[in-house]
Image 1 (cartoon, rainbow, N blue to C red):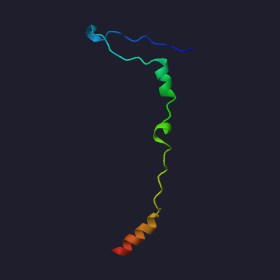
Image 2: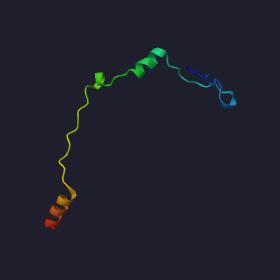
Image 3: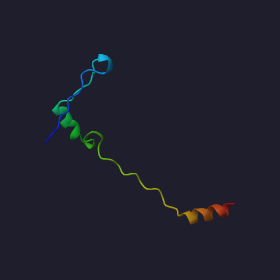
Image 4: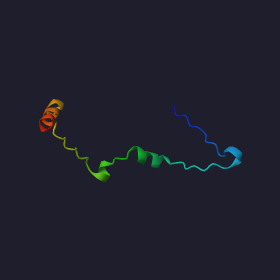
Length: 64
């Protein structure tokens, strides 16, 4: 069961509210949008070389 809510047409002070309502086709296009067809496949970033903390500290202490 889909519940639809009626939007208010006037705001505080009686000013008309302006809003855009998307059609079902536009909603379907957004729901099924696939960015890989636009930008291509995402590239995996190469991992940096891992240096354990105790090794980095040892190198740092040998420099001082």
